[in-house]
Amino acid sequence: MTSETVLAALRAFIAERDWAQFHSPENLAKSIAVEAGELLEEFQWSSEFDTERVRLELADVLTYCYELADRLGADPESLILEKLEITRKKYPPELARGRSTKYDRL
Image 1: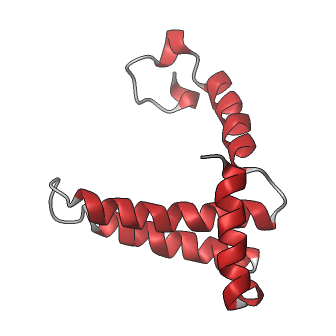
Image 2: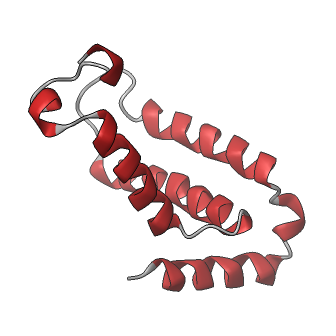
């Protein structure tokens, strides 16, 4: 499935409900944080988790992320690839492999 397929479905869903008026970039960013908190809640007291509940919460986070990217006129997949390239330079494999050290301490 491509991001265009996902974005088309999201746009249709939102249009059918006339919700675009509520989905400013600021509100979408807030929604991402709220949904990320709900995702984290699934792991709050135990490392054991319900995979289906985690999948549903992750879908909520991704939905708002895709919509925010769309509102900003950005392709989600391009954003990820661009950031990956920036991060690749910060964490060269020969220094970062097997380490969780922050880039400025490698």
